[in-house]
Length: 149
Image (tube, rainbow, N blue to C red):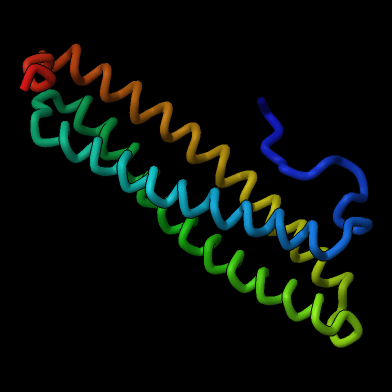
């Protein structure tokens, strides 16, 4: 699943109506809100096992992944802000389509979608790394007893 774009290929953005773009953007906002919560969970998961790590290589791996998660949280926050602004632009364009440059709006929409697709891909990769390192730490640090509580 290499392509994380939501819209169909081709000139969809240029030809679709404003209502459809609005609905699509609302979906982005919902997804980004979910990812925001997911990233908090992943960060907390790393923190839970961080205190039990005794091996230096495990410690460094967790630090690196945690930095990636923190970066994802910053990017996600900025994307949520941009999506909010974008929703306002759509609403303004729907109200008065002749007042705004729709070509610029559609370019903004496409750029935002590309940034969101990159964000989704990065978060999914970091999530895989969190679960892989957690499993590795559980095995290599002999932390299985923590799950029995």
